[in-house]
Image 1 (cartoon, rainbow, N blue to C red):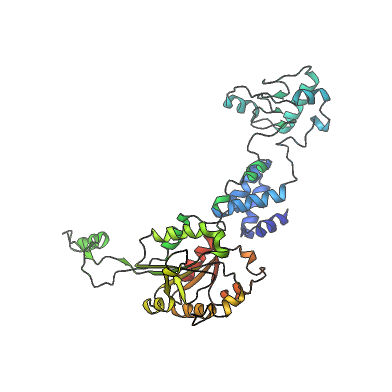
Image 2: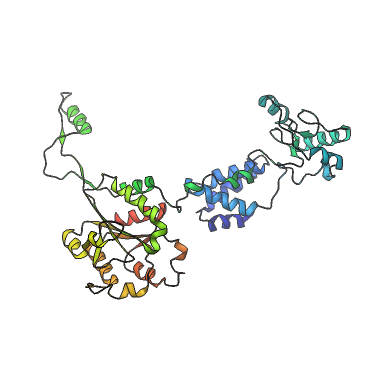
Length: 405
């Protein structure tokens, strides 16, 4: 049954399994959606979406697949009872929507909630035969702003909408709002996303030679119990963060479009106190002989990269941020008269010095191999593991950095 919807979900990035799909089909066989298209939407989302990041993907796939489908809930396919056209004078009466009158929701739900669509059609057919004038805001006739299950712009828990626009949270309307687009893990990330991901880099150690000054609750309880209830306080050496991070960020040129993104990363890292040591430097296009202490990359802020390599040991984790998009001559040839190595050679030296290293690229992943000068991107990828500059990409990159070399 509509198996192509399963493949469409996967095409939109959802990892829908056959077990989940069969569960949905079983729920349909049991009519758990009560023959309601809107209830089917919520039921399918409940069964098929396992991560909050996939809510938006599901809505997009749902819209794409069911976009041309109308349901009896909306009334678009029900121009009149038993397929008959609504009389022209009814269309004239219903052309203008009147403001909905006040109503008691519980009483309206009780009046219409248990009626079947067939019963509502039969009642509507009878009303059309009896009604001789325009009527709005009532509880009996076909009109607008009322509480009958036929008409429009009023309220009823279910029914047939005749002309007008739907105002309730029907399936296509809910999916079309895409309320979960900001939860996607391939969108631009915020400061909080960086901080959560970078916290995973923490490596704590209690093997320091310092004094035992930290009270251990668990060990105190255990030792007191072993000591027949006589209190025995246990102190431990404090656990300290042993993670050291080197951050190199591309600044200017083609990266200008991502200045705000890089600024968020800088502030997220700079405000964190979870690193034993943190070094942040900037470069332009590629890492050459000199990097800079400020994003403006001024001459007075430069520092020789070789000096940094001599100062920092291989236990530092390295994150480079840039689009890796440059003229090949900037990558394969010396940058200027002061250059001792090409950009490619410096990157290989960095990779050798810091085995636990990654490259974050803000360019859309689909463009990495399509750009005219994309050979530099592929060349950088041959040196460093490269990940998209997104919530998911950063999370994958952090896992790479945490691997034991």
